[in-house]
Image (tube, rainbow, N blue to C red; front, side, top):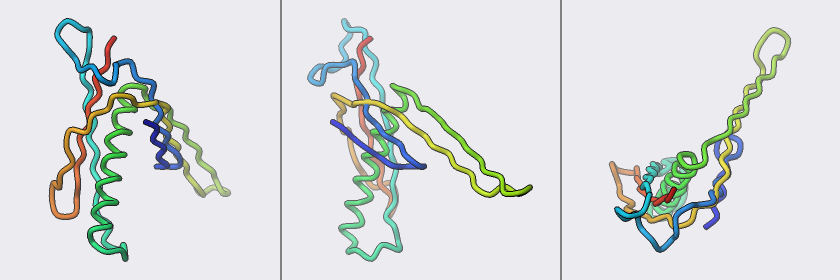
Length: 128
């Protein structure tokens, strides 16, 4: 599964997993289960019908949960740049990147946590 997100200037999740996609953690295998949680809200200023706004929020929560997994397993790279205009700060830019290919991710659940806010929970078993 390949996921590409562009958040905070460019975040790409492409994690190369260690666990087999069809094999869950067992006691006799050195394995750890990693959980990712993602939250997203329905945009109130969106002009689309309510059900389409809900679907967009659910999709965003799923992608956020996958990004969380990629950050936990692969780590993140931060780049920061501040531009000064004379003696005042003109522009500030922060880029966060994570490179990972996620294989064997299980969607545990997607549910509303309050009106207009959705939470997605995903799991990945990683053997070491």
